[in-house]
Image (tube, rainbow, N blue to C red; front, top):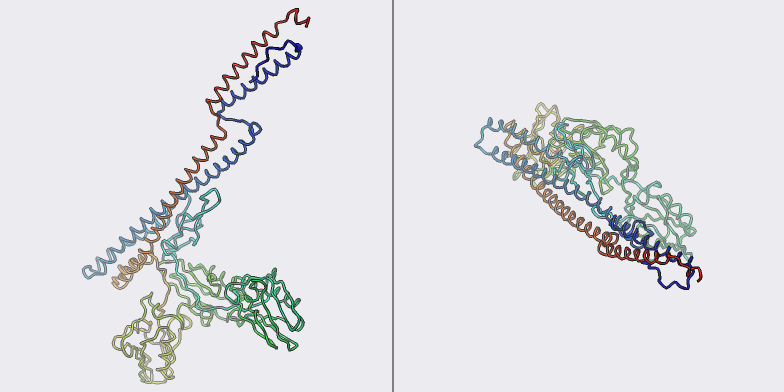
Length: 634
């Protein structure tokens, strides 16, 4: 506020006018500022009015904007989780009802017609389960992973899962932290099964092998740095960092190693060669681990020395000819994939890399996808179709076995056969093979744990009269009669041993061969499989199938309830997060109000003071502007 001084007797008239004008300007400017504050409710309208407060307000505005987006994300995620929990509850109810039907249908009190009459009910529960699995919130499918489409469909002879194993994530805090808010269908519904590769494909070490694809001699990867190499009195420090491939590494070493020492590629590791009779020592420097990871650390006598296996991992670019330590695999014959109603013959004769082979499988449209296993040592084939049997069998060669993908092979455990029911035996001999010459060969399977054990028992007992192996092409055990006679090759159970049917040998021979059934198809252990199995069992009055379906329903129901509990926990966590975000938003708005909002009481008081000052200046000015003869005389 400015009030014009009264005592201006010694000041010129012009100076009085200037003082009055400045005082009026200051008063009016102050009034204008306060009027704007009262009108807008803000302490300042532009940063220059209060730079410090403006900077704080801008920071709080950005904070509020971020919190607003986070609040939207969290509320949407909470809604998706809540809807997911609801759909999971519906799915669990459907499975629980089917389980109750299966248990009642197993008993003796129900007639075949009554069981058959339950089939439409089970089919309706299957459709109800599919609908729950395809539930969505707005445009988000709850169980499709990161795919924007219905994840389940009735096709390929079963229920086909088209989603993936990923989760949708969203920002849940202004610091950028994220959290998942969906669960893929393969977790809640256990919608896939795997044929895990039984063979370590052991790719050879090549110059093109990337350092990042090495498991390392210690199994922890390879970390490149500085090493010290000593040959006789000569000592050199070599920096290996920056080498991208094994070829780069070998070139760097050979360029800097002491004279007489060279490095070359072996099939699995590096080969050190000394040419002048001296010994060599390789060591790491100051806590490094390059020499250890590369299998080079140590003291080497004269002549060549193979270092440790560097365990190259499989990659899409690994050449098929480099598999199995560089011996490759025989591509002259392919293999057959049977998945429910779909069948494809994989003919990889033109495939050059692992990626080529995987593409052939994935593009076969049989409801499977193939990939490199997480261990980087083998392949695996994943079935997407519930309710059908997946088999991978030879097509006249040995490729499926070499790749470890054949579903029935020497290492297959007897306990895994027949959908996990295993093979039961009796005390003493279990099987009696009768050859065409009339020889009877008794085989005791007690203690056998794998199919190779069964083959060994058959071949040992046969002593050349029979030969046991695998059906090819196809899957199953094969028994060949090596004798000549007027009889017929046959096999029978001793003491009603269930091993005959358990091994799939309860079939008639054709000529001198008995070709067994495939008793190790892979099934997706999902509630969809259980419902389809139950429906077929009821339709065919197969009480054993109904019982197996009841057991699968019980098993899958436990998994679904466990995942449902996880979803409920996630929803609770997200709801708590919503409350915290709302609290943070309220606090930020309060701080912003303190920084930029005007204090109306203080502003009103200042407005009144400025009005009083303006009025005083105007009165003072009116008196000063009253001219007289005295003004001119002074």
